[in-house]
Length: 294
Image (cartoon, rainbow, N blue to C red; front, side, top):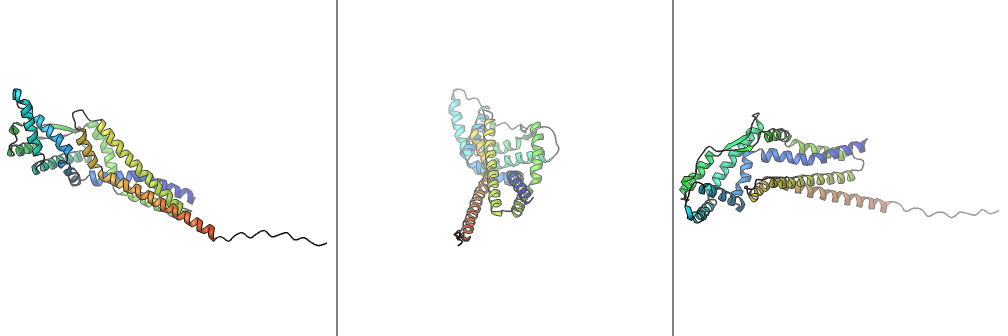
């Protein structure tokens, strides 16, 4: 019974490792607006995001002006001006404001009971961007239309699906990692051969971490594969990598820790068996049979 119960506890602990890592990431990284904005902030200085924003703003400006045969030269000039603007502090402020507004909107929808699609009004962000561009004397910036343009962040069906999983993971929070640790300790204490139990637990933790790393990589590939053709893959990849950086770091740390502990436990068990073998008394030589005299 000890062997069976120990094995069950260790298996449950290993199963909870990827779920615990995911729940902690959702609660403390994705579910916190301040952390989310801080994670997204460095992307404003990255070439991928700056290039995507430059192209989008340039296209928006050029749709409002008609310069005839000089369109190519004007587009190139506007593109350079907007690109220069994306390197300023004003752009980083606008980027943080847009991320905060989008994150607040999505969180309210996921934590509430509203139905329908989740939309984001871009008018405040567009107004701020237009003001900054005009102040920096970007050509034709004053012609950027400021309309109450709503973009759909989450469809109604996606909202219903994500809400269930988000609630479960957010409630689990840090409890799943703690439960995994408690189950692992309990399984090791109940084991008949504790060194072997430690080795099995460490290998199971490493396997769970590897599965979580694989799921993160597959999620990245699926996200990029499902993008519309007019969306910058490089910019989305940069956002995905920034959001999952903490999760990937924790995953690799758990993987390395599990393999290290498993190797150390195996070596300790191997050395203990060798010492036990060398300390055992040598078997006595067989005695010669005595012949009886008649």
